[in-house]
Image (tube, rainbow, N blue to C red; front, side, top):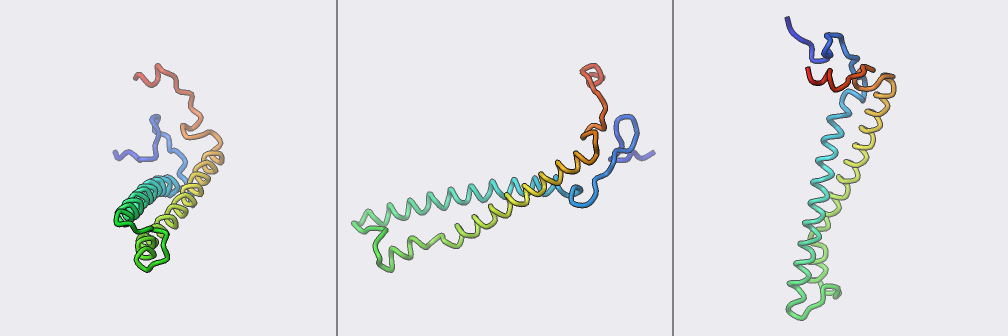
Length: 126
């Protein structure tokens, strides 16, 4: 006899999620990972910008000059910075929508994730 993945410990079927709530947990995990990667990328870009400005200024030049070379150095990571900020905002929005869908789905079930069952320590020890 095959056991259904949605069946609970007592063998009864748990209600399945419908619509957006079905994918909400996966979207929330993916959005969290994407947000962490984007923040790490922004930190790396900040460190590289700082390093490039420091190396450029060692020769007596100023990074805030209006020369073509200093403009090129300042704009070196603009595309990566803009893309990372865009994906960070998209990940935060997707995570917020997924969290809202999970919360809304939990409230519509009426009795939460555990099906309203009161589980104490003795039940967990079996």
